[in-house]
Amino acid sequence: STYHVGGGSAVSSATAPEPSLPYLPCLSWGWALVSGGGGSVTPILARAWGRSLQLLRAAYPPFDPDADDGEGGAVHWPAFGVHDELETESPVVALSWLGRRSLVYLTAANEFAVVDTVMMTMQERLDFSEMSLVYAEFSLSRGAGASPRRPEACTTFMNSMRSSDSRLLVLCRGEVKQVTILGMKQQIMSLEEGGQWLEALALALDHYESTVASQEDNQRTSSSGSAGRVSSLEPSMLTEDEIWMAELLMRYLILAIENAPESLPYVSRNGMDLAHSHFEMLSGVCIEFCTTTKRLDLLFGPIFRCFYDARYINVFLDVMEAYVLNDRLRYIAPEAMSLFVAHCKEMKDLSTVER
Image (cartoon, rainbow, N blue to C red):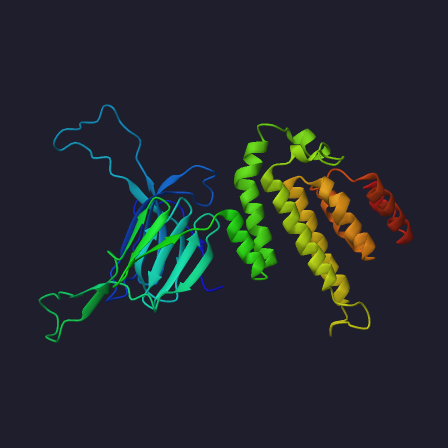
């Protein structure tokens, strides 16, 4: 990974990273969504200093009504703690929030990047070397003991980028360009078009957990959520997000099966059947996706039939067993259960069925 992601507990003051002259630190306030914050926005100060980019969370001391607020009284200054941080390849010269969970920055190498502040992952990276951005130059002042040499020129792009609503305005020499963030569905479609299927599915799961799941909690209880989705569902019971996420998973599964490696004699050097390993990975992806989104009707319907038709249903059942034993999957459709019992009999391991 290009970036190193770390976390830190809140402290009374955030320790500044070592500055990398001649690049000035950049600051940007925003009401943002961050990891561990649920669906609530939090005042976050983003700070870039050299190649270090930090998200600082403000913490206010408890209010004391008996404290003297007059002259000489205690001032309730906020403390800042490092909530998340990452390291860039080049020094950051401009920084701005764009929406509630997107932080954009520009580096000295003319790299424009967008970071998802919840997942702390790179959403987009663009080359701005042909943009002809407006910038300012000035000379850094030196202390009295500094050696008498020509002052070092410093470049800043702080006034070159400004956010407005959900847009980022970029000041160029001949025009003002506008940058907008794609919606979640558009981002996932972009990843799919680029062949980044696992990244697209992971982003879809994050979207489900942060939006759809919280809405469903008010309508379905955990006890009836899984069972109520195994039998035939009316399409009207599914949200638009649930429909296109299921279609995304099915497109991935069908494409992966069509391009699966052949079984023997194509075996890897360590003796592993590549086809078996491929379908084992596919089974894990599908079961994880469906248990998280509570789409057991999809898991034991079209997905189950795809593995059956591909003649790798036993691999699917083996992966499913681990989810059942770990209480991740508490329901098995009758057809799947009968095949699972037959599979255990064939493997002479009926104790698994009892567990």
